[in-house]
Length: 508
Image (cartoon, rainbow, N blue to C red; front, side, top):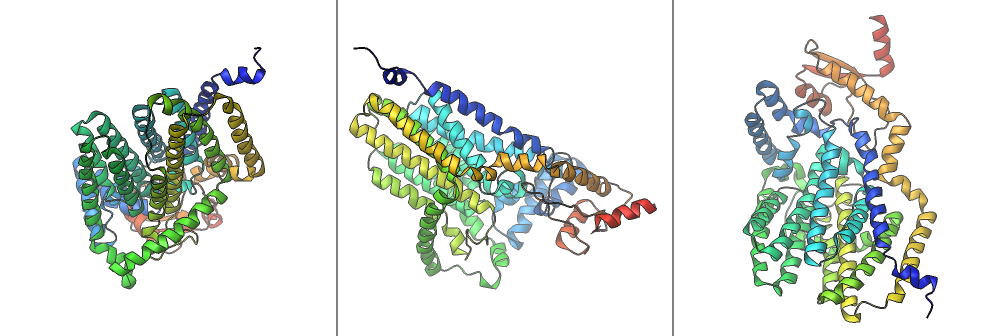
């Protein structure tokens, strides 16, 4: 029988050009972020947390003294502000501690950590465990990374502001690295993977509570799923106990009560009440995520089509097993809701902006993980039971999935303006990036002048998103003024209107 054009299309390996396209698009998508790296500068809490370490570096240029100062910072804030000991340790090592020209490292480091950690986990899960080809791994990996980086709600705390990224992006990377160690251990049973997982999980216990819950929840799921494969999965309870110990140290910090004030109370009843509130907030968050990120959801629809095509070939041939799909998927979304628990426990809300902007970033990343995990497990179970489906369905599924995604993209194209690339490009194209860099170079020149004791600087003008600048004010006793003055060893620091500053310059 003569082959039709549809049969010819079905026989082509269309995932190869898709892989090349996805990888190239992902690499190109990093260019605007890297281009803006040279404009990025420290701000706000960077000056406060980096004070002791910066002074130690300036006075001694000794790495050992800097580390001693970092531990001193942890002790100081543990008793006076908050117990997140590993985050505070990272805060104290912000790049401008060592050089006023080093802050460009922040977006490079954070995008690198996201890319490296997610790729490490997906490689272990997809290639080593499920035996998916490296080509197909690259396709899925590039697509997931594009969604995670491009559609994160707040680029400032995800990529550009060290203090925010160290508290939310770094812990998310720790979760991914720890989960990769778990999968590697179940494949190779090497003790070093337990040790590494224990290290990552311990450090995770000293960061934000949302990501710590995510790490514990994923490890518990893996222990249950891998137990039937080998009882040595129980050894991964060791890293879980290490994280819980780190969390206990964080939770018992006297600084938590200081920061929480008179309303800070930890009760069993309050913790149980927060569970119900977290489930409600999580259910609402699921709906809002589908509504608020249409382009990201269109991308995940494309991922679903590709994943289905990959699994229908892989699962029957390797006889992969996906038990209890309903329970696993329900657990993943329950874990997503659990991430809301620390927020509602302290009386905060993601929707009204009463929490740090790093919180919505973590919730969004958890949503994408839960969505991808649900698709992977659900599609795997369907392919296991159905034998993979017929080859004739391949082209219609691709056409329907890609067509729907393109339709969503056309209808919701305005959402592209929220993407990381567009925000960075717009900031540079409008000239605001160049103006900000010029102003910050001028500010640094004044503050690093050893002949100036009482520094007077011009206001930094203009909106700085996706970068962050907590402004210096007219009041020398303002928090930012005081911390920057101490950081640069000035007796005082004030800012005046730029037109006044320029007028003074003309007089002199």
